[in-house]
Amino acid sequence: MRTMWKGAISFGLVSIPVRVFPATEEKSVRFNQLHAKDHGRIKYQRVCAKCGEEVPYQDIVRGFEYEKDRYVVLEEEELDSVPVESSRTIDIDQFVDITEIDPIYFQKAYYLIPEEAGVKAYALMREALADNSKVGIAKVAFREKEHLATIRVSNNVIVLETMYWPDEIRKAAFEELDKEVKVRPQEVQMARSLIENLTDEWDPDKYADEYREALLKLIEKKVAGEEIEYVAPPEEAPKVVDLMDALRASVEATKKEKAAEKPARKKAAASKRKRAAS
Image (cartoon, rainbow, N blue to C red; front, side, top):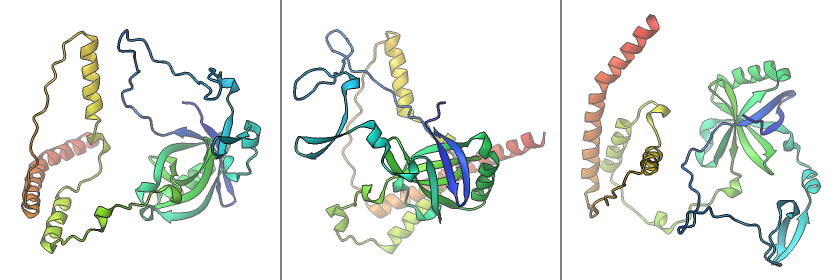
C-alpha cells in the first residue's frame, strides 16, 4: 500500500513522525459506458469551451472564478506557498469525549503508522488513548484541503478520521419537522421496548453487501452466456396500519426471535470456551 502523506503528530511537546494510509476501500461494482450500437468504450475529452480545441493535461491550469467568466489563475508553487501549519503536522488542539461528537461530522478514516524513529512515542500515545473514551481533535492538510479530524485508537493502530467543518453541515430545515404531532406515552414505551429487543453487541461480520454479491452473480451468468429471466416484483398497495398495533406486533416478534437465538448462542459460546481450553 502506498503512503499518501508523511508528517508528524504533534502531542504537546512530543512529535511523532508518521505515514498516512487509507483505512477503507470502496467495493462497489463499476461499469463502463459503452456505445449501444457496437459496444465501443465511451471516451471523454478535455475541450476548451472558448476555442473548442482538445487540451492536453499539461496545458491545464487551475483558476478561481471571482466574477462570471472571470478567473484568477493559481500556479502550483503559489498553492504550495499557502501558510498552513497543518500541511506537515497533525497538531492535536484538545481532547474530547467521543460521545460528544455527532457522527454526521465524520468523513473518511486513515491509519497513522509510525516511522522507525517514532515507534516508542507512538506506542505511548496509543496506550494512553486506549484507556479511555477520549479522542484528539486536530487539523491536517492533505489532498489540497485542510481537514478537521479526530485521533483515536482502533485495533492497536492510531486512526485519523477526517471531519466536515461545521459550516459544511447542512441545517435540517424541512417544514415536515415543524408540524405538531401528538405521541402517546404508551407508544413511546412500546417503541423503546422494540429498541431494547433489537439491541445486541456490534458484530460487523454479520453484515454483507447482498446487492453487490447478487449483481456479481448476475454478471457471471451473463459472461457464461446464460439467459437472464427478469421477473418484476409484484406491486403491493401500501398497508395502513394502526401504529400501536404495529409496535405491539413488532415487540412480540422480536421477543420470539431472541428466545430462539439463545440456545444457538449458548452453544457457540460453549464451543468457543472449549477451543480456548484445548
